[in-house]
Image (tube, rainbow, N blue to C red; front, side):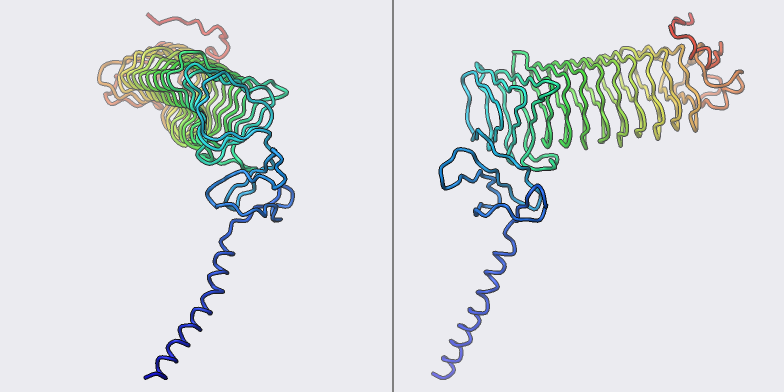
Length: 415
């Protein structure tokens, strides 16, 4: 009996000694590695840091300058902040300059203004962001833009939260700013914002507006999901460019005026609007699944191009739309009208792969004064589909070259 107990004890002790090296190996093997900017494989951080903490490691000599530490296998950008900010409420006017590290949520109180000066680089830890109840003014210059980004050398979407404007009655300003790696670069609710020369990339969503007003000029947005979404808001856009992502602009119950706006390579629809007021002038929507999709909208689209989209260039439903001087070409379908509410003249709807025009309404549709690529009614009818034969009235026919050469596009309404 005693002999059996001694054997059991010996086996147990031996088993524990066997497990101990495995435990130590497991702890070592799952410790995150951090690599230098130069070599990408050389460890540069030796201070133990909790994997999810993303804290700044303070040297033993007490120097205020800190080195940023982040978890995971991604390369951390070289960064030595001169100022570190934890979660706090800012109640007085403040300025940021130089290299700033934000580890937490910074709230700008309703009576305060945060000013970020030219050349400032702000790096945000995971989950960190700015919540503005007062006002934010970010003014870089062409030579020294302000950069808002994450801790990593190559920022990815949702590395940090973004900028949130809530009930800011004062005018918020972003000029010459680069925003990278945010979940939502700018989210405005019941607020006003002006943006000029802003570059938004590597973020999940560019701009999200709710009951807000936004003036956006000379701005470039390249994000994987939605560039701009607006609900019950007013937007003016000029000389802006949107590339990639699922959707370019989504407007619901909003007023949108856009001039010289370019949207391309969206996986879904470049520009879609519901129950909105629109004024679109000299815009270009190309190389997307579909270009323009309007439902129950009023307004106009003029001197614009909807070209080389995989499906339909323009889809219009229940919208009182003035559609003049536009070019629709290289799409599978040039234009689809679900009813006869829109007014079309001086447009070139030519060279689309399947149909130049699809009309799904029952009442007659007058589209004279446009070019459909052919010189006769018979040639044009081969590229037009209507649910009821003879519902689409094509005369008078205008050759495409006449529309193209007439730079004024001043045909006026046919009747």
